[in-house]
Image (tube, rainbow, N blue to C red; front, side):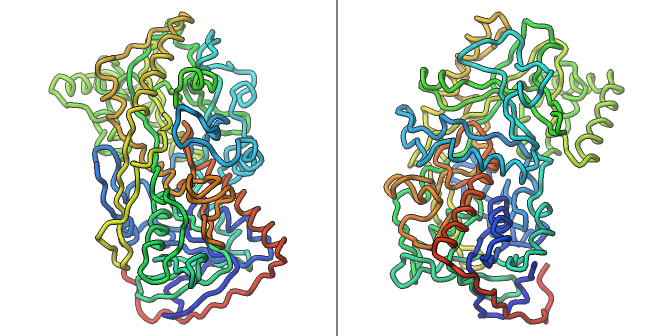
Length: 571
């Protein structure tokens, strides 16, 4: 059932077995997994079914270095469905090495291994709508070339791993009917959780205060709480609860807010391949089950251990877009309209404009308009008119020259952190201060991974990777953090001195508080986080069901006090 929180009486208390704070991928997955159990569930959705400025304003905060990290209210959506309303859909599991305690990566290691998550990845694939969870080209794309590059037989770099792409799936739309039909699930729209009140000794959560823009306030009291509000808001809620002047939570860890990570990503260098261009398999392909897939170049786990590298992969990118000598009218058109595309992509297309560059791009467009027109018709069809969307532009290079995009792990660093500022939002919640930092070892690892790729390509006679050695560090740092990948500030660990939540996601020191969010990821991998977050959410739901069964917990009916809305809600 879906309810408008503005219809709940001011001062009311709602009761349930499990309160899920957040209605994004993690929160809705948990609610759906619990829908068939004996547990009553309330989901607090910080917003309605569409994006509104008043809700987004609650995400505002301060960024210490805006040149390296996006503003706090970008790349995340405060509404039902959360950021899955705008995500790109890239799904890749974490690699086994990501779970290991690596001696060259301080504070690395999970409280369990990749094998623990394996069955949950299979179930997460259904939610993410990516077809069979196969991430090797030989099995995912049968009867097609197994590698991105023919003849690449390196033990250090492989071209056989693939990414799978969701529709991309809006979890709100995917699960709405099922949640609406679940008698023991209540989704409260336009309800903003504004804290977590501790019990008398702070060792448990007593209730979750909520507010609406009506204005009104009410509370949700539950046996168990799951904070699933995203990588930033989850940390903000928990830090505010620990610092509250009344009824603070006794979260027993020095890591809360620390170890904040993202991914290093950018385009550095270019490859001139020595193989026929048509034999390079770097574009999008559709798998037998109808899912877009794409091959990458991945630095193997053995090479990572041998050379002390963080997890890194490379994608073929179109030729340098700012240089009109590529003579591609599509790339030139993208360059000319770069300020009109999404912020994350336009940020990567920035380059100094000059009259010569502009004239070159205009010449490319003017001399090959039919190529541009055909591309435009095909792109609109595959990107916007079909239920499964083409993920992005991936242009074939007839010359065999490509830029190289890297996507790399960032090591957990206690100095990279989230804090609470002095400013507060309209509900009195302290705003977030983001102090994202890149350690020198992160940049050095990317540079050495590039050097390794360069050597392997040359040794195999597959091509030449052109790098500006003097400008490598600056180029690696140029694009800063990937927008939307907010990881690690509430990390999983086997003890409170090493993290904030235990192997099941339970807050250390809090008997009935759990976290389901990218914030719990203790390492960042080379993989986008959503797929792993959904797998962890399913695992947590299983744990909550098993825990309820073991303690013979019986569900209590949700008690709601509602009234007809007497005044309009502010737009």
